Length: 430
Ligand SMILES: Nc1nc2c(c(=O)[nH]1)N[C@H]1C(S)=C(S)[C@@H](COP(=O)(O)O)O[C@H]1N2
Ligand SMILES: [Mo]
Image (cartoon, rainbow, N blue to C red; front, top):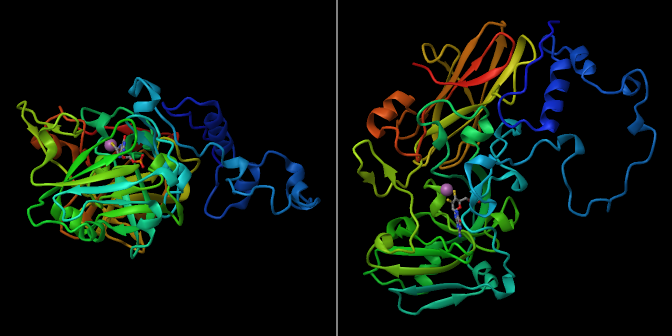
C-alpha cells in the first residue's frame, strides 16, 4: 500500500472536513475489495473483528429518540456551505449543494442549495393566499388547502441557478465541485399544473405573459411567457414527499422545468396575467447576460446541457491506485440526457459512461465509469449530449460566442486534474 496523504483543497478550510480527509487518506483502499484498507480507517481497533464492537453490546436508543430523523453524526460534514466573500449579507446570498457526497440523482431536502434575495419568508400557511388576476374572467384567491384539491402531478426536476459556475468564466477559480457546480438540486415535486389554476380563473386569449411574485421581502416578480405557463409549470407544495422546506418556498413555489432557477418563484403569492412582459417594470428582477460588445441577452431561460464529475473532485481526492468509480451528474433543460462521455486525458479520448436510470426529462441523471487508476496524472472531464443532439461545449467555444463579461449560463465542460499524490485540482486547459 502506498502512503498517499492528499492535502485539503483550497476551499473550504473547515476543521471538520480536514479531519475527514485525513481519516480517508490514512485508510486508502489498497486495491479493489481490499477490506484491510477499510479496517485501517477505523478510529478504535477494539471495535474491529474478531472483537465485538461497542454498538453490539448495548441496547440502542428507542423509537422516539428522533421524532424527525437526521443523518448519522459521522456524516456531519455533509452540509450546504457558502463562500462568505461572495456576498455582503446572508439574507441576499447563496449556499451550495454538497454534490460530491451524494449518490443517485435525488437531492435530500436538507441539502438543497438556497438562494434568497431577501431572506427566508416565515409563512403561516393558514394566512397565505395565492391570487390569480389580470387578464382572466374571474380573479381568484386560493388557500393552500384549495390548491391541494386540484388534480396533482408528481415530477422530478432539477433546479439550477443561472449563476452556477459564474465564477469560472475567466478561469478556474473555486477549488471544489460544491462551489463550481453546487447551485443545482433535484427533487420530486408534488403540485398542481399551473394551467389548471389559470383555466379555473378563466384565462383570456389576450393573455400572453404572466407575472409571478413571492411573499418574501424581495417579491422576486418574474415575467414568464404564457406558452411555458400552460406547458409544464407546477404550483408545488411538496418536495421529496414532504411539504416544501421554508428555504425552498413553503408553502407554495412555482416550478418552471428546465428554465433558470431565478424564475422558480418561492413563497408564491400572486400571478398576474398580462399582454406584455413586465421586463421594463422597475420591480421586476431579471438576470441578463452581458455580451463582449456591451449589449446583453434579455432573456436566456433554458438551462443548456451540462455535466460534471462529482468524484473524484477537489473534495474527493484519490486515496490510492486501483479500482475506483468515477461518478457524476448530467442534466439538460431541453429534455433527457442521451449520453455522457468521460475523458481521462483532457478531451483527447472519450469513453462512454453508464447512465443510471430512470433517465427523466429536465432532471439530473447519474452516470458512472468504473476505472482503475495507475497513479499517473489524469485530466478528468465529462461531456453530455441531450436528446436534441446538443453537445455540452468546451469553455473556449462558449467564450467565443459569449465573451467573459457574463456571470450567467456557464455550462462548459469542467476539467479536474488528478495529480500523482491523488489530490484533485480545478484547472483550465489551454
Ligand atoms: N420569492 C423568491 N423566489 C426566488 C428567489 C428569491 O429570492 N425570492 N430566488 C430565486 C433564485 S435566483 C433561485 S436560483 C432559486 C433558488 O431556489 P432554492 O433556494 O430552492 O435553491 O429561487 C428563485 N426564487
Ligand atoms: Mo438564481
